[in-house]
Length: 340
Ligand SMILES: [Fe+2]
Ligand SMILES: [Fe+2]
Image 1: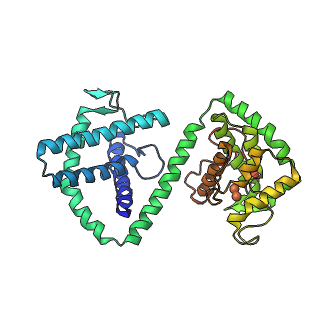
Image 2: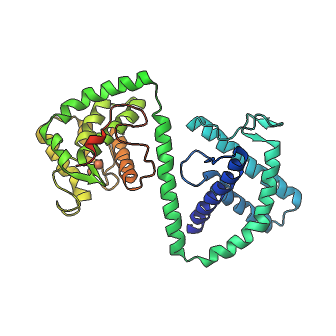
Image 3: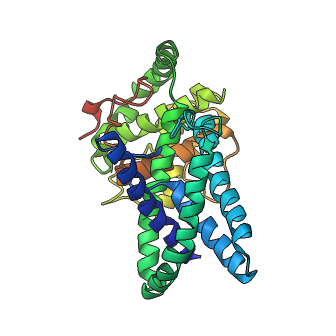
């Protein structure tokens, strides 16, 4: 299995280099191809895996030139069409456009490039696959795992961030409305002295706990709002989800990760009345570490956003996503609140 991940990672990067060279030379300036910010293209990683599978099958079946041509046409052009449609439908992005070419289909695929892909697929079979198989055997599993692990982690966070940015893209009026709703529900909670105290505790690399809970509350609220969930419960639950008063890296109970949700819940119950959803949000925010799954979609959202924010804090891919400058422009934590 690790060979598949390794191969995917290698060819995603090699494909990116190929596209950068092609597009930059045509544009006369550096062009970063694709949807993501990092140096990889999912299309090429997937394409390499598909072609390797097809090559192995065709060689086993001792297929002739015509059958290979047909299979390579379907595999490469099919993948290109699927990628183009997904990028357009889910991310509203036109990564390439063949509308000016003859014999194209909605600008996603065209005959000329399909012929290029077939030629590249043959080159891949005869020139790339044999030396790559030898090379693959040279690497010990731990090196392949480490390389694939790093590349795929970056790619996953990059993809999530792109999806979040696309999902949160809203008009100015919507943004102002969401801003007002967020402030209305958040202000009374933030005014509680115990919540304000969270600004004294570091949480994730350079961020205070207050900053973290506001960030989680803000992103969860926007996501929940899009899904027509209980926004007030999300904001209140998320602002209280890490209500504990120790520097978890230096002090506090053993097995902090498995216990702090209960501590936060007890602290929250002391300072305010909680609804069932808010209780569940705090109790389940470490799921799946806490085995019992969230009871409400609101709890699931906060748990996922909490994990996302944590990964993002430790894999800082996007420095543009600064405090107070969130993708939506709506009320979030400010830069002043970030550092202790
Ligand atoms: Fe937590
Ligand atoms: Fe958290």
